[in-house]
Length: 461
Image (tube, rainbow, N blue to C red; front, top):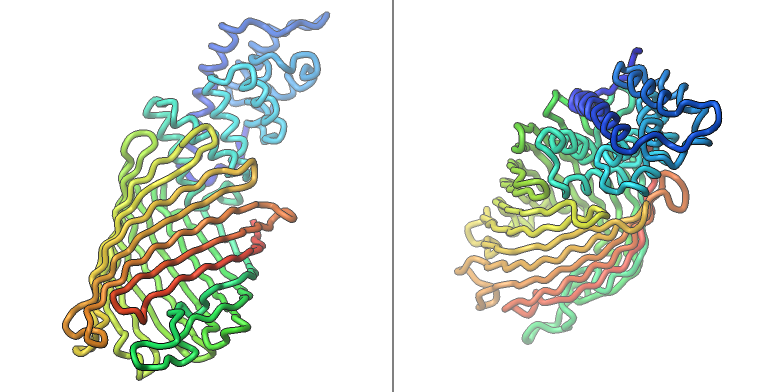
C-alpha cells in the first residue's frame, strides 16, 4: 500500500521505527492479555491475529476495515483498542485512533507503545501541546537509546516548526497581534523631580500611561537535510502611550539562524537586528551575529551556550555618545519532562561587555547576571510562564557620571499565561505581568516599573 508522504526524513524514519516497534508490542499484547470479550459468531482472537499480520505487512487500511465493524463489541479491551488505534493511525484516521489509544492507557498506563502511538497521533493532527506531554512523559521512563532518538526527532520537529503539511519540509506562520494595558513608568525614569540642585525635565521623570500595541510578523522554518534546519523570523510593532507620547515606539526586527545536529549535539549560527523609531524619529540600529552550541545530558537535561557579537548605534548626532560594540555570552541548563504534564525549567548565566565607540563616553561597561525560567501546561490548551532575572552592570571609570562611579543592579520578573484557540480557533490570549526594579549608585538611574497587559494574537496554522 502506498503510504502518505511523511516529509522530513527524520520523521519518516521515526514513523517506520514506531510501526516496527508496534508490531512487536502487538504480539506481546495479544500473548499476555488474551482475547477480548466475545460476541456470538465472532472469532475475536482470529480477527486480531489477522489484523496483526496485516499491520506487519504495511496494510493498515485493510486492518482498519477488518477491525472497524467490531468496535462496538470489543472497545474497552486493551489488545483490541491498541490494534484498532494503530490501524486507524497508520491509515490516516488520527481522530479515530486517539480515543482507542486513550482507552488502552486508562487500563494500562505503563504501556509505552500505546503512549508512543498516542503522541504520534496528536502530532499528526497538529495538537503539538498534547503530543509534547506524551513525548516528555516517555522520556522520564528511561527509554532505550533507539526509542529516545525517535522521540527527540519529534520534539525537535515541534521546536523548529517542522510539521507534516505538504512536503513536511517547510512551515510559514504569519501572525498579527494587538495588546493593551497599563505601564507605571512608560519612560523608565526616576520618580524624583530633581537631581542634586537641577530640576529635571518632565520627560525625564516617571510618567505612567495606558498603552496600545499593534504588531505583525512571521516565523518560517525550512529543513535543509535530515539533521538541519534554517529558522527565520520577522516582526514589526508600534506602541502608543496616550499619556507619554514622547516615548511612542515603532520597531522592526529580523533574524535568521541555521541549525545542525550531530547526535546529541546541536550547533546554531545566526544573524539578527532591529531598527527603532521614537516619537516618529529614528532612534537606534542594532545588529549582531550569534553562535550557539547545545548538548543533551541524559534523557531530560540540556546544556546550551550562546555567544553574540554586535553593535548598537543611535541615529541622532547628539546621542552618539551612547554608541557601543556589544559582546555577550550565556550558559544555560534546561530540565524538560517535569511531571506527567511535561513542564520545563532552567537557569542561565549571562556575562558580557559594552565597548563605547566614543573615547570620552562613560557608557562602556561590564555586566554579569543570572536568570531562572519555567513553563507549565495549564489544561489542554494553556501554558503558564515565569521568568526572573538579576543583572549587575558596572560602568567604566574614568570617566564617571556626575563625579560618581556608576553601578546598576536590576531585578526583573515576568509572569504570563497563554490560552490557545481562544476565543476561537487560531487565536491566542496572553495576559502578562512584568516588574522591573533598578538600583544605581547614581540616583538619576534608579526606577521601578510595572506593566500589565493583555495581548490577542491571530495566527494562520
